[in-house]
Length: 337
Image (cartoon, rainbow, N blue to C red):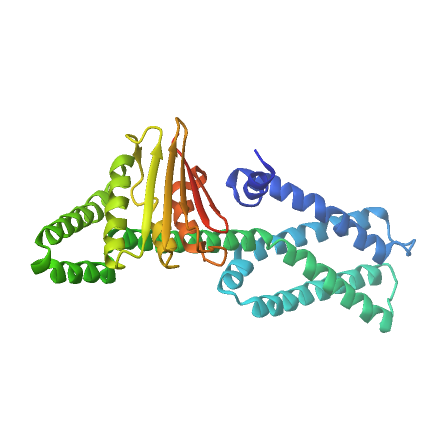
């Protein structure tokens, strides 16, 4: 059990409730016993049995106060964020507790013929006790605050994960309308002058859309099919750009392995947004790792924002992914096993 899980279990787990109570009791014993000696220690008339008995009573009263705070007071105000109201109510209750303690002390002193004078020192002592007891009682609310913090964190993380997953599903199934319109516009222009080219363009487009609409919804696809999709995509992109874009795709190693869909295309799209004249795409596959590189020789990628794509990859694949960005290279390593 690591330190973080031990602290979490100690503060929250029902199995640690007895140990928590014992720890609180041990912490309050010195506080409960020191106060009677401070109040009665200078009076020889007060027997030790009275002092210890009063101390035990203080300990019991403090434990009751702590239980009331943890079970009723803190859960009522702290989860709602009503911290000011909680502090005010706790101060008032603690002030009442301190006042009752002083009244009990005065009654014991009067029973032994001692009358305690009220002066400025007494007021300062009352205020110091008020602060001391308030801080002590409030500190027992850490379990409530910790539970609320963990609940809020889990809720936020769950919402972020849902948002990212929805965004990923939307990203996987979306069709780039600008790319689609540009391809269809090119095909319509070539319909009369070069029908063979038009037919080839529409065929490549149908293959691309079929892959994007159906294969992307699977849990895994062949790397070979994914490379072919990238090739078709870049051929159409080159065609739509007036043949300004040139590209090369090379692959070494086994490409007949299964990978998650849509793993590399988002990175290529990020590179294409920088309007490079040349793309060099490399795949290097061994038994454990796929190394992917997208190189833009004439375009620097140092200022490109990869935050969202990094979040998607980490959410989907965890520690299987390593993404690096260099001056003109996007490098992704995917651990197969």
